[in-house]
Amino acid sequence: MKYKKRLSAFNSLMILLLVGGCFRGSTSDKPPIHINPSMDDQSKYLAQSKSAFFADGSTMRMPVEGTVARDELHQKTEYYYGKDANGKLVKKAPIKFTIDVLKRGQERFNIYCAPCHSKAGDGQGIVIKRGFIPAPTFHQDRLRNIEDGYIFNVITKGFRNMPSYAYQVPVADRWAIVGYVRALQRSQNASAQDVPPNELNRIK
Image 1 (cartoon, rainbow, N blue to C red):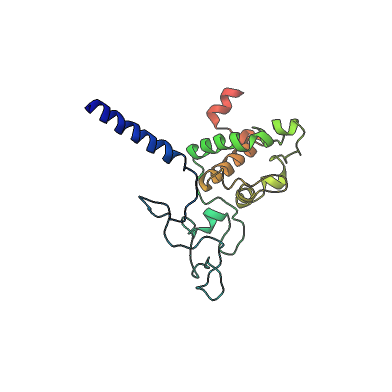
Image 2 (image 1 turned 45 degrees about the horizontal axis):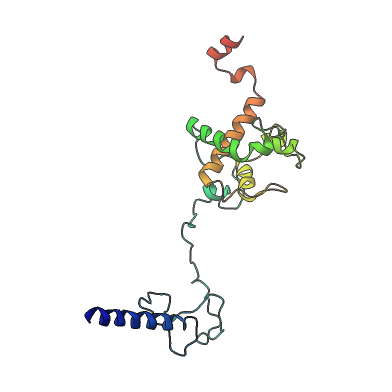
């Protein structure tokens, strides 16, 4: 008898579950149950939406005058922009070109610059050999005598068909590349006087 009652109760429960399943997907005027509303159901303005609160009807507000975006307080203009306080390109880089800096510059140059400019800096990189617009050689008087700030700015903003590398190459690495470009220029236009005496005797 107890077994039959249990079986009957089980069957009733199963029928209720099956009948309830038939109503899945149906609409209801009642709000859905949200056990953990968190912050996604709070009252808030959406970007680009209209506002009835502000006089101009705009939800998005202009920043307070003098607001500086995070990590954008670049007061050292020579370092961050390659220009002095008057907006002129700096002739010399604001960092020391140590061996470690030049090695870093060589690594970054070979990754980002060599495909067009070649590892020798003569503008005959593999991309150029595949038909891309030729890059200028660094071994010309104009670029040998150009300001360090000019090279930094070209890396930062791009020039003609060269894109900007501001997002791929951090500021410190841009200066390191500038130093390595100068080393390349020196190597391709060196004289016997540039070679240390002990090395000069070895190669004679």
